Length: 100
Image (cartoon, rainbow, N blue to C red):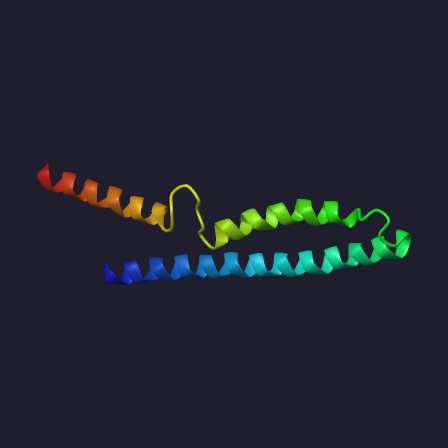
């Protein structure tokens, strides 16, 4: 049982690291691509209309929600809410089995 627990923790940690890595690669892509668009915007019309901000805003919203998910920031349920609920339900089920 202990070995299985350790393996499950390892797999969850590995998945979490993969999510964080994906977020940071998306963040780097965002910075590079938006900088490129800003350069094109400046080169073509010298900031008379900063259209690159539309792309920055749209992509930024997606990046913001990805960050909330990856870093487990939940406005409604608080930190680690899901994990606490899972453990609570597992304990309830275990207690029910004891009484059967």
